[in-house]
Amino acid sequence: MELLDLVRTQDGLIRHDQARDLGMSPAAIDRRVASGEWLAVRPRVYLAATHVLTPRATLRAAALWAGDAATLIGHAAAVWWNLTDRPVETIAIAVGPAGGHCPPPGVRTVRRAIGLSGRVRVDGVWVAHRAAAALEAATSLGLVEGARLLDRALQQDRVAVESLRQALEEMGQRHGVVLARRLVALAEGEARSEAERDAARRLTRARVTGWTANLPVVLPGFGRVVLDIAFPQHRVAIEIDGWAFHRDVDRFRRDGLRQNEVVIGGWRVIRVSWYDLQETPGYLVDVVRRMLAADAVTAA
Image (cartoon, rainbow, N blue to C red; front, side):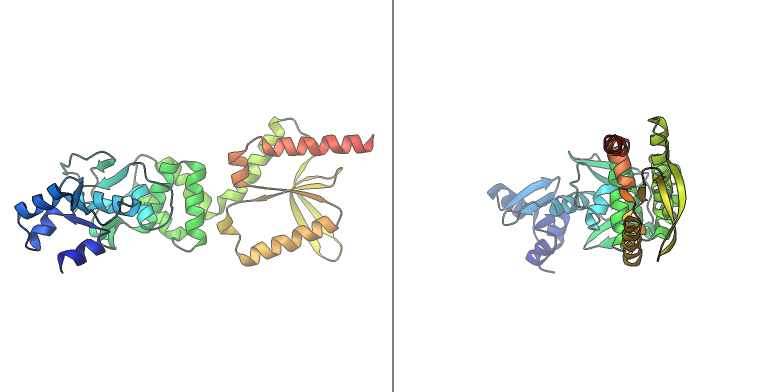
């Protein structure tokens, strides 16, 4: 491969040894750097001045610096897989248990052995397998943002629940495994059940009364439905959603038709999701109290 072709395929980057392999002498490399034709962006990694150091190029530069024995992991790997566009603050690279790299600013080396079965070369960069990258990135982002990453990846069929289970098993007892275990459980379908329990807990702690969980109701012309949380006296139903992944097109359509029938049957519906309860924990109690207060004024 010609040098210009390699630079082009590597987002404008070239490593010192790659240039040497293509016939350039150390002196010729130094002249290009001195003239500003090449810019040193990592130790012995250069960016052609005709290119821009994009976020993608920044990840590749770190990978080039670390060498082919190293592997992009975590958030950096998830970005490389296009699982998230959230900026990477620190690029994590697994260098093996004997790795002696002294990382440059913005790069963190992890002494972790990743065999050939645990990594794959994607567009010239060695990265952790997609599910492992997604799960580790999710744990680094925290519960809610991590859930969003996995939920979106599952929706787009970029990862599968089974592959996340395998990635969790391979984590062993590494840092973040407790959160990773919870995220995988949510991905497996626990999100809606957890949200239902969370909603009931919040109403109980706030001493909101008059509600019943899992109330069966028969709707004329539609049949029997079970309302997640209901205030029968006020004919108000709280419907709870889990992750978007668990609502495919058919489920989304059924839920919409079901809610229409509940409304036609004389019920008002408050809809909250797992994300709502996590991000705005006071919202459910607030909206219920406002609904009860409005009913009291109307009754008076």
